[in-house]
Image (cartoon, rainbow, N blue to C red; front, side, top):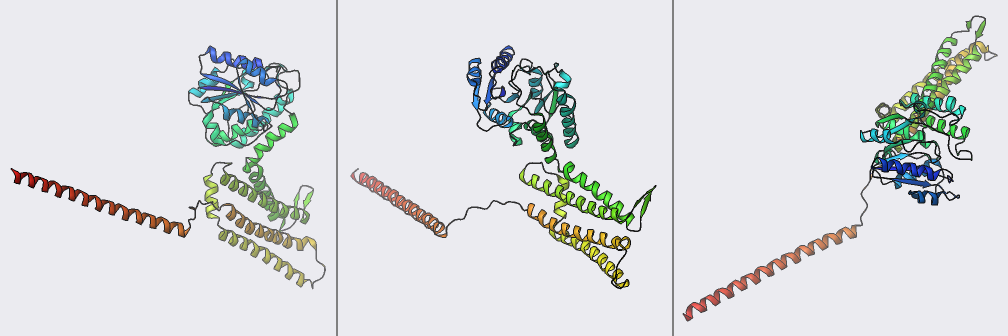
Length: 434
């Protein structure tokens, strides 16, 4: 079968029949060997019966959620290609040919773009149209290098085998983002075609919740991009902390009428620690996600982890600790010069804060090197253990089989020799009689 049209369904009695008939009409009009699959997520309004009566195959999906329903339908699809779309009559299932043509041309994933195809007035809330969707789509393009302009279009088509290889995990509305992100990271051929969006035909509110589902999309994009979630903010904190710390270690800094002194130096030290921790979290997340298959392999991270052994981490941490201890010793000598009395914080903190910062970062480096080494341990498959008695029994049985085969062969040779002797004796007797 070439094409399966999959629709998630949860109480869509008002529109399900219309959507199924449109999809089947498209298949018949273009002579496409296909089917319509309804992934029912527990409807209680008779949607299943209406879908069957219209000619669809209904697949029950027990796990709740938009993503779970779609994955259940995709797994059950019999077609080489799959088109997925909502069953609320907002997408035109009679105009799927541009999607199928792109798939036939070699695309792995074909996204619809509602902003290029046309959005009917009232079909998309203004908050979604002018803020939510553009912002989230921009973040997706920025974080992952995608060229897709409408990350959340519900009408899209793909090769079933390509999408199944991605191992999609999310069960909610963020499933739409996960598919695009993972396909992009996997290097798939992802294309986009214009499509239209109409007002849905339901009288009830949609399942989509603006703030909850918007946050789930943003949360997913952040979690799948350790670079933007941890690395870039961490490097920014470290840069600000380093520049400010170096400048303030030699004395106050004035910018116009504003003076920055040891209070700012304390903040700079905190920024260094926070930034360094954030950078380490980026590394932890990347290594773990790569090991578990959530993110593709990154050669730069592999090279870094291969170089940054636990031993090198201990050396780096030791050097930072030495720098910190040197600063603390200098502060103790400064205190001794002042007869262990009261000190001027504006002088003493210029030694203590950098020393304490280096000491904290030394322990971060040491613990991080240990943790990365643990994360980088590879699971190895070992052959199953066998019992020595069983192995001995196998050897004995093999030897017995060989002995039995040799005896049988010897018996066969003796039997053939006896037959030959008998034949010769019979021939000799016949000659004597003549």
